[in-house]
Length: 174
Image 1 (cartoon, rainbow, N blue to C red):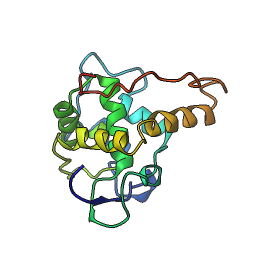
Image 2: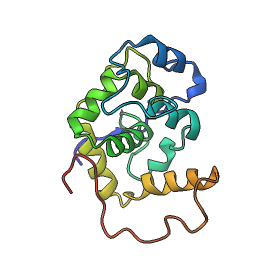
Image 3: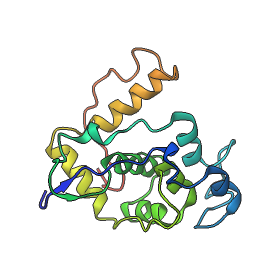
Image 4: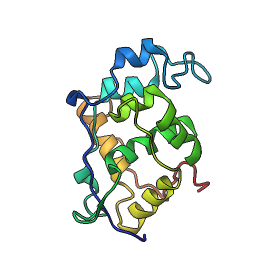
């Protein structure tokens, strides 16, 4: 992949530099969609529930093999991984996922972003996936999610041990 981007920290929910969950649910601003498309899952918006129940399970260091320490600061690969998860869950194109980062308060909360965060261009997502594949790190997202689910007792010890024959990226048509 052309260009040189370095790791940029993924803000922790406890940092105080993120969307407040109560504001995300009650405020209705910033594009939050009460009822959602197809309805909000019981217990609230899925992106909010993911952050509240699973926490932040990706760290930028998980992607260090494909992001150099030097170079122009880039977007947090941990945040891009979470966007990729949400994109897959909601069956969104790259453009729709980038729009959700810009305009949906529940996504901003899940990603630890400020309300004013302008997000990123949709072209960042295929670049992120390409970087993972080229660096041999395409399983990092899946493996870290499985580890977190096992850690919380939501999956048994053998879950996720079967090989995956190919990578299926959201928005990529593959």
